Length: 180
Image 1 (cartoon, rainbow, N blue to C red):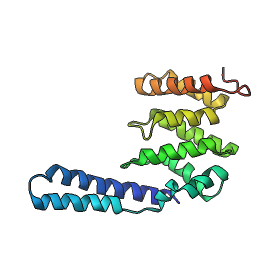
Image 2 (image 1 turned 180 degrees about the vertical axis):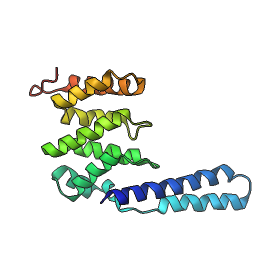
Image 3 (image 1 turned 135 degrees about the horizontal axis):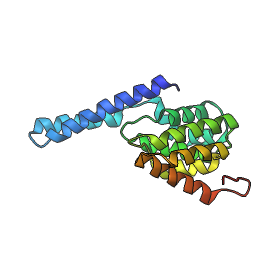
Image 4 (image 1 turned 30 degrees about the vertical axis):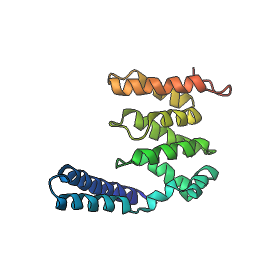
């Protein structure tokens, strides 16, 4: 899996979803428009991408089990954080599985960079609580310092999200971590 595949999937799903929305807005005007809408819905539902394999139980087990192909694919998906219809659900699943994994130090740093980028991203992708749960696992002093910096941002969106994530981390920190 590579960036090109993820971006191609993102573009195609966005194109199909836009066509479906357009057809939906006109579907009541005639039986022909109703049929056009049904075809548009069928096209988006039947679209297949190798990216969808991230949803399968086998791949999810591989993400948790070790740093192979699917762990790298999950990290790339988190890095790129693509925006398309239902992409947030896939991102939430990736966060959940990475939280369960024993991440290597370079993988932790990569996740930290992705989560820091997600703090300022508008509109967000996925459910923020999954980001916070993953942040608890990968937080270290340097991550906490960067979160505190973002928590002082003049932008209320960034500041609010950083404050909430930092609160999650501090509330759930283990005895082995000192982020004060």
